[in-house]
Image (cartoon, rainbow, N blue to C red; front, side):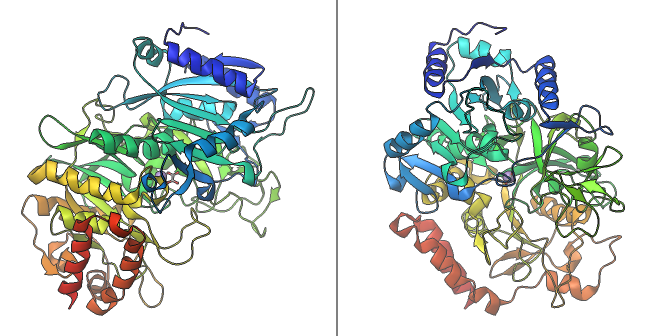
Length: 594
Ligand code: OXD
Ligand code: MN
C-alpha cells in the first residue's frame, strides 16, 4: 500500500470483508498509470487481455458467453419494506437477501486478490460529488474503474479527513481451489448472480458477474440506483441523461440534459456533429447527470463519470465520428472481433467486412458466418478526456446550468419528431410515459416497454416516489426550471423506411428548442403538446420529401386515444401511491383528445 488509511470505518469494513471472502491477498489501489500497466501486463500474460496492435495502449477482452450484459432479472433493490422499492423493482427484504448473499460471499475470493478501489463520482472535492470504495476480485474491473471513475490517493486523503463513503462490494463469484487453473473470464452461473442494492444503507453487493454495469459499480449501481435514493432524500436529481452544450452561431450557450433508454443513441447525441453550419456542440457526459439547484436558482449538472462505456456495434464515422476518434487509443474493448492485421471489427463499422477475423467468442469468423463477429452489446471503455469535443467545462465542480430537458424513445409510429411540454407538470407526465420499442439491450422485451425517465432499470426507490420528487423539484425551480421536450428520431413510414435522417440532423430539432427558449420560434398547440410547423424548423440544406416532414410533425388524435389504456395500465400498478398530479395530467390529455 502506498498510503496510510486512518478512516476507521473503512479499515473495519475491509477487514470484515477479507474475513468473509478469504482472498489470498489484499491490494489497495492508487489509481496510477503504473498500477494500470502492471495489472494489464499480468492479464496479457494470463491470456485474458489481447493487445490491439493498431491502437496504442488498447486491449481486447472476451467475456464468458453467459456474462454479456446487465441482468435486470438478477438486479435487486432490498429495503425493509417492499413499498420503498415499489412495483417496478425486484424486491427482497434486506435481511433475507444479506443472508443469501453472505453464504455466497463466504470464501468467494479464495485463490484471488481482493482489490480496494477508493473513488470519487464527480470531480474530486466538488460539492456535487460522492466518495465511494469498491472491493473487487477482478483486475479487469479495476482497470475499467480507473477509466470510468476518479480513483486514487486524493480520495483517501478526503476519507482520512472523516468523509463518508458508499460501500460497493463486488466478486466474480468464482473461488479457486489450491492449484486450480483459472478460466479466462471467471463468473458464477446465472442463478447465483445478484446485483443488489441497499439504498437504506448506501451499500451495493454484487456477486457473480464481471460485465459492465453489474461489476463497474460506480456506473449504474451507485451513479443511478443508490444515487436516485440519495437524491430523493437530499433534494437533488440523479438521472440517466447525457449532458451536452450547444453553441449558436452568435456564441450563445445552451445546456441540454437528455434521457433515452439504453441503446437509443445517447452517446451519439452527446457527441453530435451539427449538420447546420455555425452551430457547435461540446460533450459533457453520455450517460449520467447529477443535478442540484445552484445558488443562482438554476439546475446545475455534473457528469459523475470520467469515461464512456459505450455500445460498440453501430459506431462508425457516419453515426458517431467523435466516438470513433475517442477510442483510437488507451481503450478497453470487450467482445469485439479481432482482425488479422491487429485491429478490431464490429457490425456497423465503416469499410468492408474483413475476409477473416476472430469473433467475440474466440472462433474463426468470415463474412458468410451465421453469427455476428462482435456481440450486440460489445463495449468500449475510454477516457472522456479523449473525446475531441469534450467541453472545457466537463469537470467544472459547479456543473453547468441546464436549459433543456429532453426525453424520448424508439417509436416507429405514433410519436412525432419533437414536442414541447405545456409546463413542468406536463413534462413530468411526458417523461413518466416515456416508452420504447425493443433494442439489443433488452432481449426479453416484446412490444413497447414503458421506461419512465429512461430509469426503469435504474431507479433505486419506488418509481411513484421518484415521480413525486420530480414534481417537487419543479416547485422549487419555478420559472428557472429547464423547459421539457420529447423527441422521436425513429419514426418510420408505412414501407418501414426511416422518416428522419437522424445523427447530425438532430440539431434541427435542438435549434427549435433553443429558439423556443429565446421566444423566437413558433409552434402550434396540439392535444399532446406544442409542435413546430415546418416553417419553424431550420431545414436548410436538408433534402427531405415534404410528405415526410408532414408525417413527422403529425398528431393523430385517434392513434393517441389508443395509447391511453396502455398508460392507464402502466400507472395502475402504483395504486394509491401514484402522485395525483400525474393522474391529473392523464385526465387532461384525455379531455384534450375528445
Ligand atoms: C448503459 C446502459 O450501459 O444504459 O449505459 O445499459
Ligand atoms: Mn445507460
